[in-house]
Length: 369
Image (cartoon, rainbow, N blue to C red; front, side, top):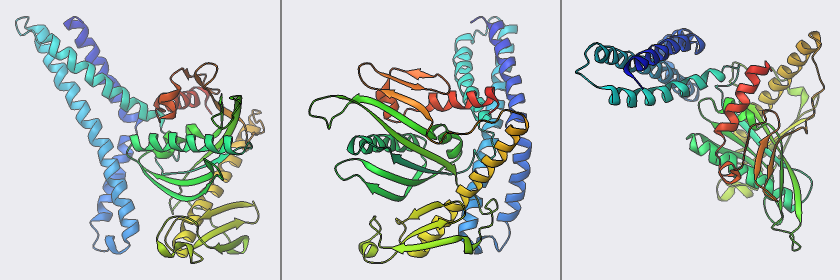
């Protein structure tokens, strides 16, 4: 790349960063940082340690976002000055070094630009994920476990914390269902692309005749609501059952009634949690998840009403298929919403989901969904 082209490219990169400041709502985030800093300086701040810990973590995330943009902006400006100096003085000749740094900065800006796709209301929240095997016995349960491993590895690559809340193992192999929380910055924004029915076509390892089988599993992803967001739940609308836990958590976990199942009678939504150490902890976790599910239901109803007024509403199909994984007779993973596809099924099942996540987020933006 010639030096004058590098100067033009760096000027364009600098302008993009200026635009990103607005798109990333950094001024709003700076105001929120100031408010949170004032709260953390209060002598009573750490009296409620759980709430204080959440706010401290949020403050750290917001500061990290703003500081990353500021650092990147300064680096682009410094490199632009260097390029302009080199262009003016032909004897300096730093073109190769400047070009290498420009390519690295372009990649960093592209990653920052990706964050503008994560601008929906709950994108920055933690996620509650559940995976359910479809009909088909062991074959479907094995597929559900494969999806669980895929999502776990994706979360691990992002350094997000996974907490299993409830799990039902298959009789021979795999899982019937699993229910877990993912804690991390923008966890819901990334994982919402996985919400829906996933279809697998392969030669079954459980079939002695080596026949081709089709299996289905459902992944449900909802944002974990913060206390300020949760809707009011009338205790009269709840049926709460306790039972002996069958999960991990210590020697006494299987001998006490620590597991909790909550049924919200008006909606028939059921939430079960058994992997916390006490009944009270399980109940608190289950109530947070129930509130998240009810909030999601309320948001979906409001969105549907808006679409009705615009004449665009279509009845949602809970079992609608979102992605197909074909492992035989050829190799292909295809997202049926975005049409993004890859033949590298192994990498996808090992948790390489970034391309599918980005394709989904861009599809939502362009389709105004």
